[in-house]
Amino acid sequence: MAARERRTRTTPIPAVPRPPGSTEATPLDEGRSSTSQDTAARMMAVVQAMRARTPAPPRPGPAPAPPRLSQWPPPLRPQAESEGDDGDGAAAAGPERPYASGWRQRRPWLIVGAMIVIGLAIRVVLMRSIWVDEAISIHQAHMSLGGMLDNLRATDRHPPLYYLILWLTVRVFGDGELAVRGPSILASAALIPVLFVLGRELFDRRTGLVAAGFATVAPLVVWYGQEARMYALFMLLGALALWAQVRVLRDGRTRFWVAYAGITIALLYTHYFAVIPIAIQQLVFAVAAWKRAKAGMPVRSLLVGTWLTWLALLIAAAPLASFAAEQYGHSQAAGMGFGGAPSAAAPLSIPGSSASLYAILSNFVWAIWGYHANSTMLRIAALWPLLMLLSLALMGQRRSASARVVLALALGPVAALLLIGLYKRDLFEIRYFIATVPMMMLLLARAAAGGPRRRLPAIVATAALGLTLVAGLADQQLNPNNPRDFDFRGALEQIRSEARPGDTVLYAPDYLRDVVGYYSPGVRTEPLSDAQAHGLPGKGHIFLMGSFLDDPGIAAQVGSGKYALDQRPHRLIRTINRKRIHIWEYS
Image (cartoon, rainbow, N blue to C red; front, top):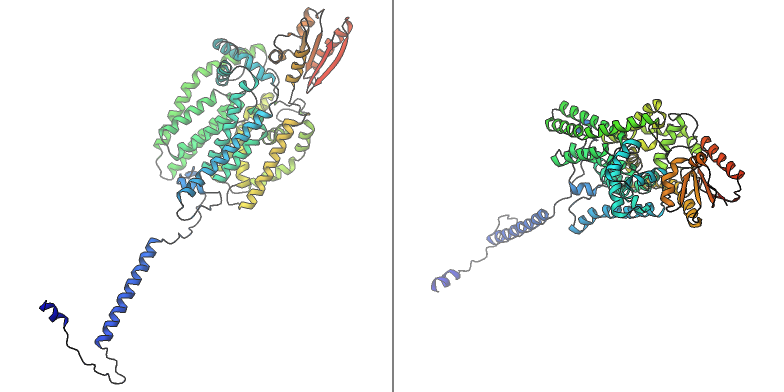
């Protein structure tokens, strides 16, 4: 205590007055100065700590250069950047809250989900009558598995994959219209999210969303999404094959190689003309390998994966080759050529050859805006100079490597079948290069909304193009003058409801057998040609049904049948007219 008291006791120092003008600091001034310096230092430390906790916003960097072909596809972007990119490079800056970031990632898929629901509703609600080719496929699906494959070898021109799917569908869900068209409806609806993912991978999220929207209402996608044939599956697998190739070139992992090989094999077993887009994709692999080697990048894994894929394709194609050879041999022996019954897609009265300028323009119009009356098609085809100018303008624009690949897959099959069509006229038809339609949707989406285009012009261009697709869809599905829409359902259901035991339905041409049998089970039916050969029925009512009467041979056959019935004691009661179906009832 004594020591503490001694330390605290100080002797007062008398103040010494400073002379005027003196600058010498006193001990008291020195203490005050030291205290002020300590306070300033502490304040600066607090300011620096606050700055360290709040990072400065990043400065905008230069825009990335467009990828060269040697860099195609461009490297994978981080997931957050890919989800946040709207196509104009305006990604969210700075850290985002977890909820906001999750919403930005979920929002596109919510939009795509709504598109899928709308697409399914359109395909189910606007469903048309079963077509001739569909009825043939349904009849084959009712056979045993071995019998169906034998029938395909003898009478059909397509690989067996879709028929195997339909065969299984009929045994699980029955043969109602919705059941037999279920695989095509699902494949067509699945194309919507596939195009979204593909557009986002190749270009940006905005392009993917617009492409998915176009696929929702694209008339030809809807048309073949309602048909119990393989064309919707052909479109879906074509888009999936390009997606798998993008993943292979960007990632190179084994699972993507396996996916690409499996999808490509499925393409081959779906349609024989799938060899054309498959060959184009192999050229893309070759160019990518050459560019990488030229840039000094490793290419061994790419070459090994490509060779193994070729080996898998050769092994898988071996049994298909013998199957196709048998089909070709039966076709040539029967003198049927490539096709049998006319297709709903085939133009019923188009002047000129199948490789004419009109046919080329018609197929492009069908691919984008669907099927329409001949008068409408002639008006659209009359605009070909404007379409040529638009094409030249688009060719003059700078395109990315991804756009060039999609353009090759969109135009390459058309050019190949155009050359084949010069030799085999009935092969230049939209059905056989329908896998190009998803690629055209991608190109249209990129032109309307992709790249550096600002938001408002992109919205206007997308809305304008989307409205033309909706108008084309409405005209295709609802216009009674569409020459490719046949009301077999309405005509045959009316006959079935009015026919009595002993009545007979005579029909022409003969290949209506399966569609007549599908819609009028339990009713006595007979081809008109058979009845003319062994004699017309002598009792009961006779319903004479004719279609494809713009064909002179069929019209003459139906005319002779009517003449024979008019000469007998039968009396014409009434005439029933449906879309492209004519019925004469005799008592």
